Length: 166
Image (cartoon, rainbow, N blue to C red; front, side, top):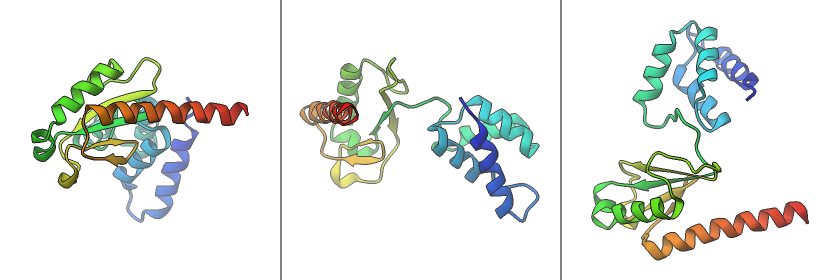
């Protein structure tokens, strides 16, 4: 994995900041946007360039729920487990996804196609139970809708292959 982008991200934030230390959270957010997660090598490079102890970087990244220390799949599925979603059947939705994808909460499929996680709350209680796929909300979920969603993802992937080979 090439980490030249880490240098560019840090330089961009150094140029904006008037303080001695560039804003760490936006730097980590940009690194995660670039790589999809926060690889260890990116932490080491950031630590050295900003002269911030590695433990402090990990402290920030583990404190905020938005940061990922493991890679995610091409299709990242998050299941809301907030009160409304939980009461409306989110645990059943999670179980169905775990069964269909053959992974547990917090895992990624061996082919890195899917990753699955739970979230405390999406803040969209009116469409409970809800899941999110790559940032797109899907509400009023049930087992049938899970099947349809996964079938649509598979179809999109096939359509993309046809376009590329076409």
